[in-house]
Image (cartoon, rainbow, N blue to C red):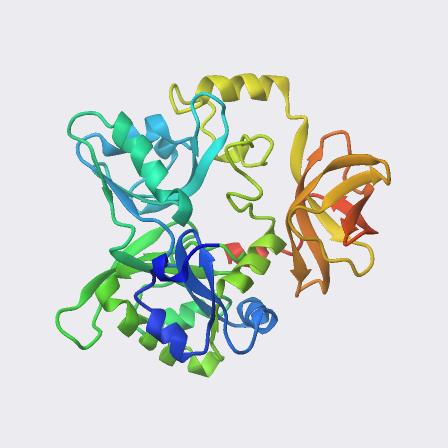
Length: 375
């Protein structure tokens, strides 16, 4: 067990303590798991109105210098040539030897000499290490992991909340704008307002210097009061992303899973001349995957959890659950698993839940409607 005293904390930690948050360890950080109302109510707040998350544990790294975009494009999987400055892109850091996923991250294309990367907390140092080792002369990678906070405002009323604090709203999904926030304590500070998120709902992620994060959090909470804004922990973030079938690195995708198996091959620029893992992934694509990340929906009342075995019959083991939870939207258990390809969508399988074989249906995620994300 990780010693709590060794964990990093967000610049908003005292705000969370004051709100009665229950904390848990995430990638070496002590972060809010849930607040007094609990995960289910926080989940519904995002689906029905608006919630605010502190996701400052996420990594931040800037690739800087002449040719920064070309360098990122020659290393990470997706094709930055398909987007332009002011746009963001989901991409992967692939191991060049195995084709496994070192991390999944968002790249923010600021200009040809600046690309902001947001990896997962636990993988930031490794992604930065690999980029630094490969960087050509003149290109540097600056690890900003502990310099900036990230606040996520997610839900159908997210535009109204951001507009209430003077932030730009209404830009397209996977784009970002730079703004200024006047917290009333000195000069206004810069905020990167990103139309991104991990919940499936309309929403934004705001990247701001640690020093201004508490004032921005307070302002967003105040602006959201008329919409019953809910502070949300990483527990509800997990139930929301699982309903969307979004993979979590370290559970659903990892160094042991390639993008084809993890159903994130759409984030690979297959026609690019170079990126880490290109040759091994092209060979894997040609061969075809023997397993795919699939969804599991409970037929009755069972709730799957990571590590539970999945079987075709009581004697034919298929795989293990990689992510599993109770879906507050569907009011039933759902999960993700790397299911062998021969098992068809619609098939029934068993999940061993504390010695009891519960029946689940194999489906292709997402589990809930995704149209709100694009609205």
